[in-house]
Image (cartoon, rainbow, N blue to C red; front, side, top):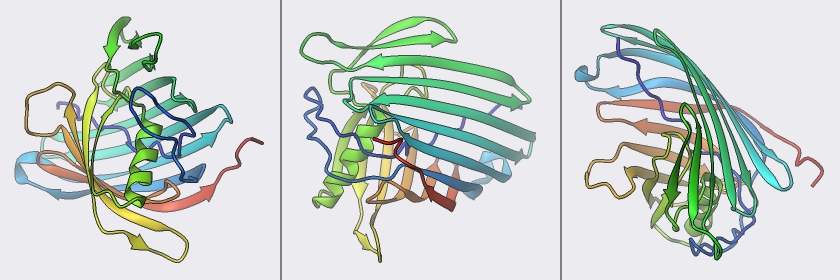
Length: 261
């Protein structure tokens, strides 16, 4: 049976206290939460052509404040039953990002049965006045690639989404690099729905579409629906692939200390 690739959670969450001159994004004003969240994964709407029968799993997401950096750790366990067999996968995806937005590093290890082990790692340096942006992949093979000058990393992307949603913007476009697909850079378009005011937080339903940067296809690789709070916590996430949906529901949430910053 062919293994299925499950994109890592896009919500690497909290805010960057930075200004990216190349991307023309002002320093975020939101005060987001360093936290640990547990999500339950289930199979949502799906076509018969997907071959999907059932899906169950869980994701542990930790966002840690290292004063000069943000560290995000994801631990995924997923079991899938399809009409041609069963697949189980476990993965760890760790990212490290400078709060000034200058660099980003990732390490991705996945085990699938059937399938085996896959390991990918690398780093990226953002463009500034003295050098152009670049991506340096270490595994599975060493290679170097250009990073578009407009590209930003996941943290600043999410911070900008929240700040602009809070300012009333309803449509946004970003160029984002996250390392989930090697050197692939994404054009991400976002539509923001009506704000939901709760007792302690405001949240926005958002729909994000991920396209290959510079590509010509009109069909996104994946679309994500998320209800995102103003503190950076995702209350729910749904990954919409071509013929099936993975739904993620928040089950546990706890605040983490800021490391004494």
